[in-house]
Amino acid sequence: MIFYNTKRVHKAFQNKLSPVQFMVQWQKTIASSTT
Image 1 (cartoon, rainbow, N blue to C red):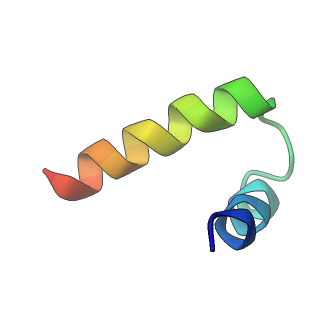
Image 2 (image 1 turned 45 degrees about the vertical axis):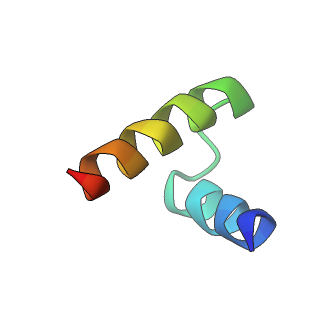
């Protein structure tokens, strides 16, 4: 499931984020969605 989400998110960001930036952005998204 995580792999699917990773590909989908990367498509959404048009692959402009590096894996590290993606992880940071992903954590921010999770944090904001749980708030």
